[in-house]
Image 1 (spheres, rainbow, N blue to C red):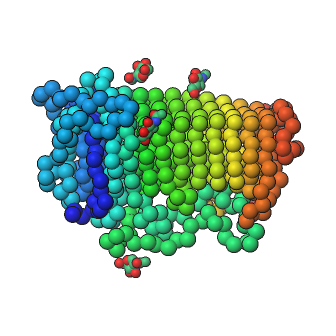
Image 2 (cartoon, protein in one colour; image 1 turned 180 degrees about the vertical axis):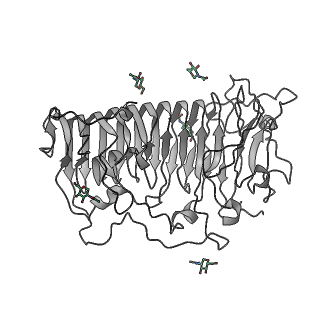
Image 3 (cartoon, helix red, strand yellow; image 1 turned 135 degrees about the horizontal axis):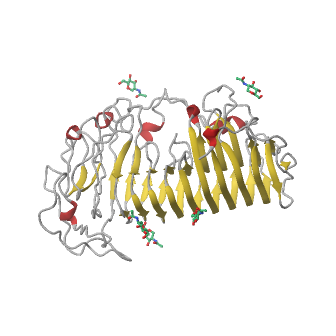
Length: 482
Ligand SMILES: *[C@@H]1O[C@H](CO)[C@@H](O)[C@H](O)[C@H]1NC(C)=O
Ligand SMILES: *[C@@H]1O[C@H](CO)[C@@H](O)[C@H](O)[C@H]1NC(C)=O
Ligand SMILES: *[C@@H]1O[C@H](CO)[C@@H](O)[C@H](O)[C@H]1NC(C)=O
Ligand SMILES: *[C@@H]1O[C@H](CO)[C@@H](O)[C@H](O)[C@H]1NC(C)=O
Ligand SMILES: *[C@@H]1O[C@H](CO)[C@@H](O)[C@H](O)[C@H]1NC(C)=O
């Protein structure tokens, strides 16, 4: 038993990475955006890492090909993936004792010994069994931004029925300094006038070794700078923070997978997209404590369909433009979604003071049930108690809502746009939302500086939308062109 918990570890892990022309690099998670890159062209690894240097890792991992060196012999054939695949036909090679799970030192597994082919054609990445994160604060050191990370790969596929379990409960309430609350929580007023239930009590929970967890919480699985990434079949649960993240990726497919965390787990996005293009997410169940899908700056051509979301905070674009940054998001389609018991449904949130634009968003056929705020645009996003008023804003245009139906428990529509840069071309079609009185005050639809059209009558009537375009031209600076 090492310093991190391997309790209940049923590791029947067979993972082999596609290593064709690719590098799976060892990354040092630090604050900031620095990775150490391995020089090897043909190497792959799946590692849990920590600390400033790889050598100091307390985590086990799997990595292949020998970092920085090419494999000297041709790899054994990969197991054939396919329906009903239960594992390799031949006995699974077991890592040498003391190497894989020695506890206090990082470990490296050669994926080629596990049957990786790495010829760029064979689909040879498979995750079965459960990978469990350590829950001792020692194992995480001063904290890290991601637990499992893949960077700069081409054509990587992670598939299988495996589970990645972040054991996040030791982290969720252990952050007295993390006072960021979702801005929309303040729109939700309980009838009893108790504080909003979405605000977690700040009771520090000690980790298994009695020490507090680091304030930097890791994302469970992250892909960075990669092309043509596919994630399918797996379950990611109880992540300390975000479950699955794509950063600077082009060509992402996620389907038939699950994220699973309780609704009160703070800041646990299901799938987080940033600077990523050509993304397809479908046939997926997302339950978490924050956004089921979060679409951040630099994303375009994102198509999300047939997703179940809840609990969670719905599917969100943003928050964009924080700290006066420029944000660009375009061509986003979200359709055929079921949301149950989420805080918001479909939402666009931007901070005051930002620039750039969100253009071309379609939310279609969203079935909501017991959703607090099904339709939200919030250009005054603020996770502190007050944010100063600023004139510049991320501009919003071409936002279409069609066939958003079901039940809400607080307010059906909340469209709050910037005074200086009103939202334009907002179209609402076939909206049918019925109230359910739960524990909250109910409100009528709200719009502020929102222009566009109602192409059909809506239930309830949305009289606050301003038909047409704003009379004066919107103040738009050069910084807004994306
Ligand atoms: C957490 O650990 C601290 C320091 O070891 C201790 O003082 C405190 O009582 C513990 N709290 C709980 C809730 O166990
Ligand atoms: C990604 O996949 C597409 C479609 O299969 C292919 O055309 C493209 O070349 C791939 N991109 C890279 C960088 O491998
Ligand atoms: C979905 O993934 C599961 C493993 O989690 C697998 O058993 C099942 O066959 C997959 N279904 C499809 C349609 O791919
Ligand atoms: C918008 O994104 C979709 C994928 O969701 C893509 O098929 C389409 O070509 C994109 N449209 C433009 C104009 O880029
Ligand atoms: C910001 O503007 C809003 C609306 O005009 C106003 O109610 C609020 O008091 C202002 N806040 C600050 C901090 O100036």
